[in-house]
Image 1 (cartoon, rainbow, N blue to C red):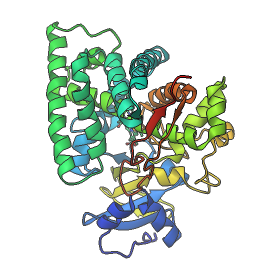
Image 2 (cartoon, rainbow, N blue to C red):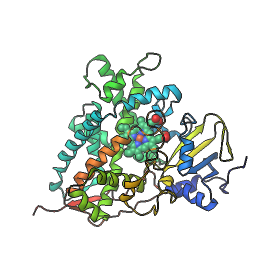
Image 3 (cartoon, protein in one colour):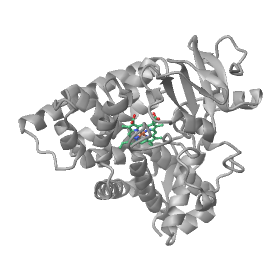
Length: 415
Ligand code: HEM
């Protein structure tokens, strides 16, 4: 059994914060390997990238997500008792609860809710000179997510809920005061969501059949027990927060439309569904979002001559795998056509994790994300906007990343 190639630094926490999405790929290249050992926050960590590493990482029941994320990231992104922290049969049962929302009918309802919310928001644009697309998309998806989830959201409450959910996303990879603020806002969201669950269980609020609020409030664990209201609140937030987070992909899609005028023209005309899909997939591959996923080994195993011990902390590089030149020729070139002949492997294109949706930890919201992006791209391609002078830099040390300006759009005057 050989030892892992080693990052020579004593501890690489600051290098990770400085290099962000580039941290794992840079060391893989330097050490000429797909897997290496380093130390982060004074803890031994094994980092990996590439299709074979993803296949190994997503082998059923091999890793637990428990104890694998920094506490603040866990609190802001998934939280204690959530589906991500479960394993084995308990995980599969809870995951089925999420996947029951991802059928064609439910996704069509989400798309319709988003379309209405976009139309209402876009109607306000001509009266404003410039709009910050990230803020607009956050608000649109907050409204759409609540309607889809069966949650009443009075107009006056939308800005506060949007702010809370957006702060959880922005704070997930941060340290310092912004995290404290995001945690404070999150507690507010949790109180609100727990209150909704109690109202549904008392019969004081009717949540539509098939909506997340109803399904989650009525869900029973393997022992036939209802989930505690706090856990239902956490899982509701696990629907609302990431749906709002799709705004970041929409902003990157607008950037791609701006930089690829031929694609903008094609998508504004009558694109085939394959063209639209290819564009959306390339936005998800090319642009940075979740840098990596983390797990801890549940039972020791060997892989490619390396020994993984029980409890080992392992990080799989998602961004690096989506930019692996062995899988994606010219990975730094934005080229939607590459998806026309993609082999569909669940391990080589992993912006939202890999492997199985139903039985593994792969993101259950992947089809919802694609549906929301398709709708937004269709609308944005047709609107007559331009981008005024602004700072579009994407700082790859900031996780999650975004164009610095949030992408300002200026609507052409009617004429
Ligand atoms: C898990 C990314 C949208 C709900 C994950 C994971 C990633 C991810 C990387 C972890 C996979 C793993 O642990 O192996 C994203 C990105 C999104 C997005 C980039 C785009 C904005 C959504 C949406 C929903 C959602 C729209 C719900 C409607 C969840 C849940 C989990 C999860 C509940 C935990 C699943 C489990 O542990 O079994 N997501 N996601 N996500 N995502 Fe998403």
